[in-house]
Image (cartoon, rainbow, N blue to C red):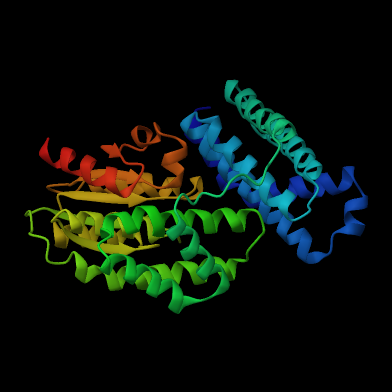
Length: 345
């Protein structure tokens, strides 16, 4: 039984396995039935599906860190919302027992080992609030306006800084990007809601649109980029910043945004015939979609170079090679440098 077969078994029977794991967990701890209403049971079932998905990707790529990092992220979310993490640890034990009965061979032991490593990491890890991710007063003030819902003041702050001579590239990196990271950090700690996060993203996107004229007249270099978030990926602000940085460098860009179906993305590549394709993914849930894009792009006549980025690849710096990309960049500025290198090769 090879890695892809194990992945296929876990993902193909994910719903059935998740239901079996949850039922076994409730049977071993009958008190859960009394404490969990239908809504909470449904959420638990969804959580087990996520556990299985991340586990499948970790096994298929032989990268246990994908699963462990996900669990540590989940622990912080649970702790900040006063959920008993011991239930998660026990649930993973039950999941391991269920998979041990389904699989065979050496990879069965590896799957169980990865789950055990995740359980141990959860037990040892102590989430902390951590320091703010904001390094400048401008970023701090901008974030405060966003959290308060003050769109006008946030906009005025940025436009005043640009008109005062601050380069748009520095506004992007030091303020807008830093603020988005901080907003995500605050949600992770349950200090703001999803509504706050969505509002902040919408305001930042509208400000980025207003900043475009400040660099639109940059002389063109005769190079073209297509930038996309992987199918299923809902976070597009980071890859949009990447596209804008390429515009600042004189590239012509074709930004297709979030959740573009594979077929439509391939059509865009055929029409635009770019020198470079940039793909973003934030979690392992979209890793398969990235692999599908890379495979389909390689089959195109005159295929472009392929660069990947996003939180998923930032946490696993060697992952870009596993998905078959030509390169990886941790941020927008590095992406331009890497992109130019790839096209020049």
